[in-house]
Length: 260
Image (cartoon, rainbow, N blue to C red; front, side, top):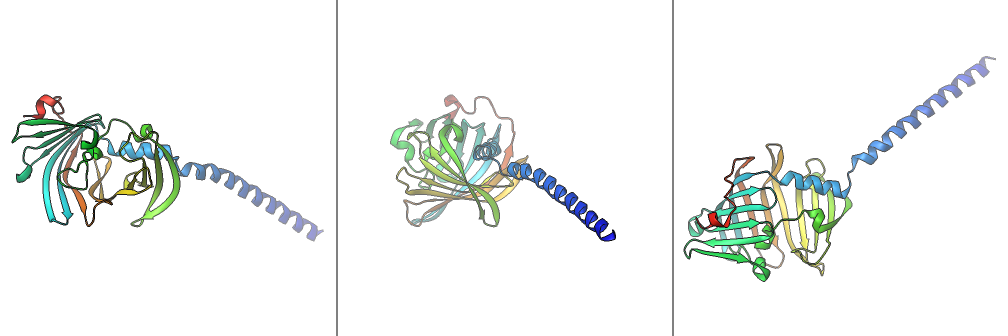
């Protein structure tokens, strides 16, 4: 009789344990499914993190190529994702300006008092001989409007877990038909990106470093860009200071103000 009661207690305990495990697993499965966001959600959070209502930054651009190393300094302003203004402050380029409004790029040269609108092949020209082209500055559309995105899993970048996102252009009228971006799985800021031609040839690589939280945004204070079509060339974009959510004059991004 005692053996029968003992077996009954063990059977009951096993049943309770089994039910507990099953319920625990049933609870964890939805949580696991929610733990990894979709490619679209990752890209939305990536863009939300790097799009400021307004900003003002002091920036140093360091170009390292076959001619040696040289620096240019600038003040950069932005409003949303459509408007940006760069004003060079270094002696050699002082007063030169680059204005972006949606998909249009304008250059202003103070010595010639000349305003130039860039279009077509001119957009692919290098900015001050750097690894950054004027085409890299264009905006106006979100990444999800421009690309089909796919989550290809996770990878470690410099010790940080990242989501690897592949982006395939919806049409051919883009600077880079294919991109791969590694997005920090915790901060939702890009840590590395690669841009490819339609043929699959690597065009550019960007590595984002020294990421800091500023006013609730994760900001890479240093970005190193390499143009794969140039030998022994790299450009470092270093943010020396940045203010987010600053008050900007409504006319700052106008053509009328560009020549002043």
